[in-house]
Image 1 (cartoon, protein in one colour):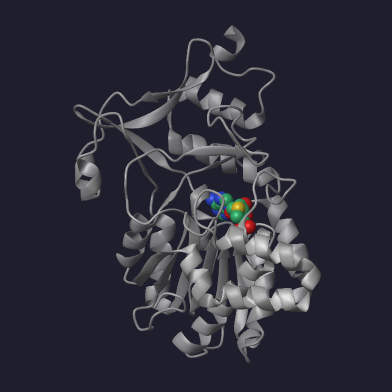
Image 2 (image 1 turned 180 degrees about the horizontal axis):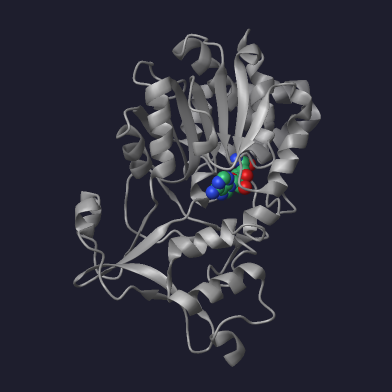
Length: 374
Ligand code: SAH
């Protein structure tokens, strides 16, 4: 094993080799840095090199389960544009992490029912993966709408109102972990042990003044528990934009409505859980979204926050049952498929996404309550 203890083994992938190289050079690295390298290391990261979605991939998302999901998001977008924003021209529709582009395609088709909507919008996709960007470009060739791709939200032009959408984007952003010890919170790091294996360890010094940034319900956490947090820059940027130039955002993901402690970092490959410290770069790594932290970060920039509400509530209020009935009436042979998708999207408990997934809306303070959040 000595060949990998010191640095780079010949049989590890390029992401793992880079992580080993950095730890050998600079010592143990924060969980967030490990996650960032695993997912988005240029040329080699998990998202950069593949399309992880669908039944043949590693996981499946709501828009890939059924067209109903994207269609309802499209109605949300069109209603927000017309009823809340007053149907302005030159609206940027921004999607963070569009995957295969499925949600936006379904959404635009449904939004056509709103006269004038198509003429008013330009599309902006924020995508880190060249592989997925290529798929998205193919998917939108036929849409005949002006579309552009950006590596981060900061690169999307700021002027003019925007409607910003994100489904299963925030869970892929790097998460930091700290562990409560008798004398404070210590950032959790990843190191290589004597056998050359990745292991969790703790920073030598506790995080300074960490209690002051912790939500009150987490401050009294017992020894040994893990607290996770993300840097809030994306949520702040969304909040800043829509507070200054108008518009609204709809963010859907799995996570908790209130900040709490507990470890949620997980690895998924081939529709099964995998080990977070094995073969980084070959599995998806995600952690639950802390919607309280996300909402607080955005509202600190001046926008209004609605929710979070559970996904079943949002989709129910936007009319998913009516839409399912119409689809079944139109194609009776597909009825069982529609019912299965409905159960998956709004079902509660372990098999459904309806309860674990939450939706939060962020809006220009001048606007009213976004559709589905009243
Ligand atoms: N929204 C899609 C895909 C979810 S998977 C769906 O619901 O099906 C996550 C998406 O975010 C992928 O498109 C991935 O490439 C992208 N992504 C992940 N991390 C990113 C980052 N840091 N910056 C930009 N895009 C990112």
